[in-house]
Image 1 (cartoon, helix red, strand yellow):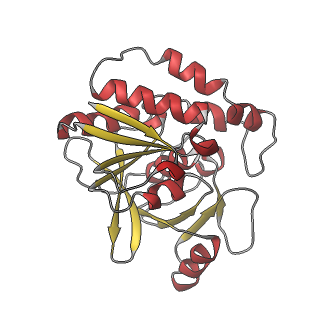
Image 2 (image 1 turned 180 degrees about the vertical axis):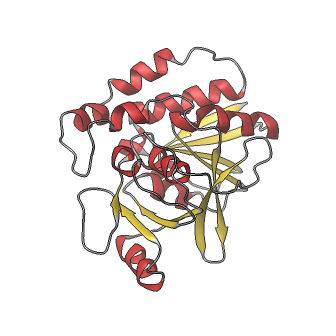
Amino acid sequence: MDARFLAIDELTAPPSIAVVVDVMRACTVAAWAFAQGAEKIVLAASLDEALALKARHPDWVALKDGPAAPGFDAVNSPGLLRSTDLGGRTVVQKTTAGTVGALAVKEASLVLCAGFVVAEATARILRARGCDEVTFVVTGEGGRADEDLACARYIAGRADETVTDAAPFLRRAATSRTATELTEGVRQGAHPDDVALCLELDRFPFALVAAQEDSLMVLRAADSASVHPVHPVHPVHP
């Protein structure tokens, strides 16, 4: 498999297959949302769009980066989200990197969103599809985030089955600048367990598949063997 690792700004044309990686924390949060029962996640292009969607659909759950803010129901933290019952709900997610990356490749024939928590499920889809060329969109720090690069390279290695040991990749992620900032409380809207939760390898059995539905980019949990959406799961308890 020919794997390319690009920053969002380096995307010059829609790739055929894209894997959008945001370990800390958008993709991890998305996986937790589905684990807590969410039906789908709508990826918003801006805070204004997220608020507009929430205004049109008051029962939807709006989520953003940073501290709590008027109009939003939750923040982009797996540690804070894991105790929220999202059974059957639609989540609107807007973050500074992960959602931007997914929207940047919305024209791709297959868009997967990934972190360590869904790494093997993501690699399984790539293996099943027999993908010859895959573009990994490294969303953090202009494509230089160690945690995202480590996860992208790990998934690429699992997709062609050349990598079996996740430990070096997890260590790289654990010592990244983002992990340090989260641990030291530099970033707002965080929980002390966020880093640990983002580094739980293969916590969930499903993959995250994004596709355009009408005028929206929608993320769903999918069976990694068939890329078919799965029914919302019952909320899990930490």
